[in-house]
Length: 136
Image (tube, rainbow, N blue to C red; front, side, top):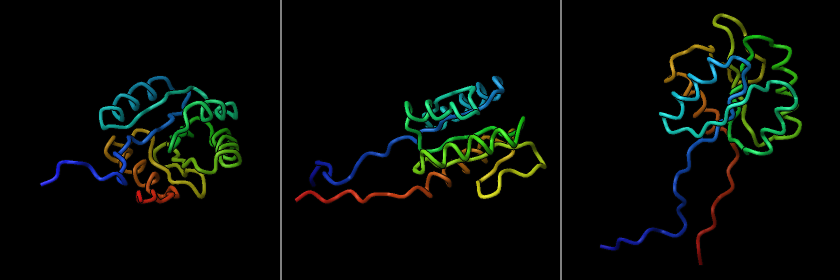
């Protein structure tokens, strides 16, 4: 039995998430719980268009954008992200019982962490993939 690893299989990497919220408590708690589940989390208090600089530095797979304080600000940030980072997926954290942004996956801000993790994973799975060529 061979113990060598196939050369055309990459190890699984953690899902990189940028958590964008002005709510420091939400950022601390959510980041901690996501990190315990294997996500790589970058925290930011930015929900405005300057969030783009954070995305440029961190190259996330998914942005969790807190829209609970202002759906308008979240919409502006989502438009800026989509215009410049079409490879980044977006999940909206909204107030319970309210609507999120049309066209984006939404989750209640204080939903159980299992629900949030599942939504982030589902959004990650929607990313376009480039096949890894088999070695010759």
